[in-house]
Structure formats: C-alpha cells, structure tokens
Image 1 (cartoon, rainbow, N blue to C red):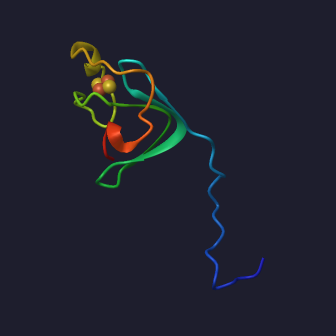
Image 2: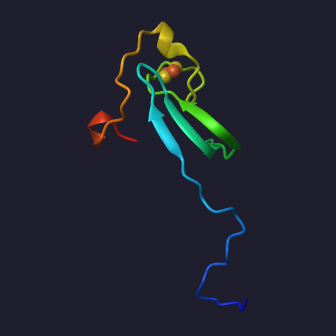
Length: 88
Ligand code: FES
C-alpha cells in the first residue's frame, strides 16, 4: 500500500453491519445492533441491543426504563415516516 496524502487512511474498524430499529407498540424503539452509544460527556458504550425511550418518561434517557407501562404510553408499532412525529 502506498501513502497518498489526498486520501484518508484506511480504517481498521470492522465493516458496518445492518442495524434494525423496531418501534414496539406502546413502548420503546428496539435498536438491534451492534450499536455504539455516545453520551454528551463522550462516554462510549457498545451494546448488541438497545431500547430507546419514546414516551419521554424514562429516568434513564435515552434508554427505556419501563416507565412507559406506568404512564399508559400509547403509540402504534410503527415509526413516523416524516418529521411530523417529532424533531431530532
Ligand atoms: S418508552 Fe419505555 S420508558 Fe419511555
């Protein structure tokens, strides 16, 4: 391999895999990874599976802590197809 200053060095990271996100009826978004979650302070956690809160009641955001059940959260098991469902 030759060094070419006009190109970024080749990554040694493994190739990306497909991540599946499933909107669970009346519950969180299931992210089936592996995924890398980076906190605002830079803490990185790598997990195979993650449940993301979409009810807004979790004390462990962005993770679901089961609060959606106590708060009667209702939502279909589909993700919005446009930004009308919220802004990221
Ligand atoms: S979706 Fe489970 S706590 Fe919000």
